Length: 368
Image (cartoon, rainbow, N blue to C red; front, side):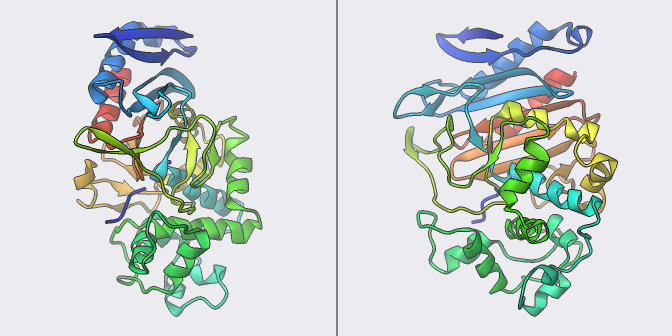
């Protein structure tokens, strides 16, 4: 199975604590019912995480680049009892893909890349099929390339064994696409591992360095690309069975398809770039949705309605943006309102089937 992949007030309910942080709100008139929204948001989190004694979730709401509400509930580390708070770091998993796609779009805007360039341009002695796959095919998941997770598993490499970026790329290049590239959407993490390689090839910099210099540092975002790393303040992830929790982690070190580590508050701050285009300008913003392809019903099982997949993000019929991330016990939902003014993020360190619904509820609360 393919993973789809990274001022304080205390609210209590039945003795259970929710830690909430309220940031400065730029437009008080727009939040005349702010207290009510905070209470309703806390209720959403309590419903999502009924008990504070097990692993849980954190959530944040952003408005035009400002965090207007964020909270955490549950345990970040069951062994130590450390609680999840708004400063707890999570692996965003596949919610990292937007940064990879935007890195490519940034280079396209600087005339250093073209989306119609064949993948073969970026490898020496590449297999023949790479001549027919373009960067746009990779970005929109229309390449037909199988997922490297399945390829490594087929070679006997388990998630508990070491596997790096080059291991994934080698497995991909040794494989054959399931079909020729076309406009049919088929989600594959391989596409974004390959795009990260392209960024490195063109810039001569490690992907992690390029993203840090071009996105995280200019926007003052406390984010890092660190696959399989024990980042300070990071939550541990868990599997649940019959009410018991087992630590879940993997030494796999791929990036581009995942591996961004941050808090939900930082991700909703990043979301404002979809409104302002501060990084990349109007050309990058246009590239986010240009050429987007229909997902059909391929994501319906994950709770996502049909939309069009753009640059590492899904465009829904109401023009909102959304993506999910799932990797080794970390689960996240990121959503941006149709007018790009409001964003929400919900992240969990254990499987929580309702985190996508919770994100929708929070967006409704703060845009209603």
